[in-house]
Length: 125
Image 1 (spheres, rainbow, N blue to C red):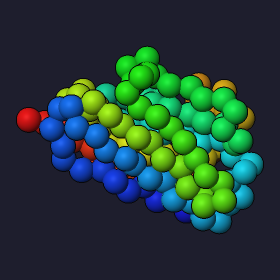
Image 2: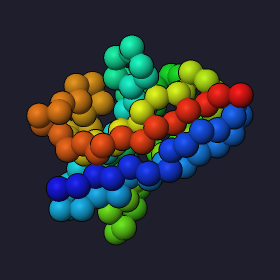
Image 3: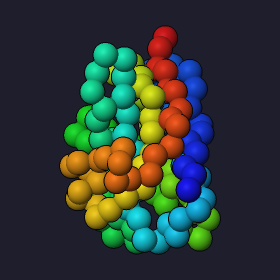
Image 4: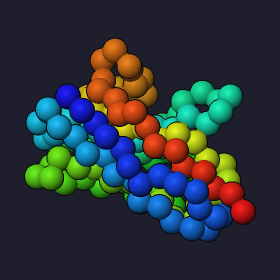
């Protein structure tokens, strides 16, 4: 099983980025997918989470209205569109596959879920 994040980088405040989580070795239809982030010296936090058929989505309050999570199970891929980026969005962003949706969102687990290696997002002027 592999989850590979890409699309991170260094951007200025107000810019946009689109992160991609490419999966292999799993049938994506069976898994909820979450995006999580961890900034230096801070705990990991949930950013967005989408159910297996995209029927339910959760967003952190801090990104609501700026970030959009989406998925295409036929392409084994999940995206995180990030608009109006702020310095406080700076972090390493990880995608994770697991389920059920609420459990993944509330209690993501390195033991129970599949994780990618992360991609760095830096927002700075």
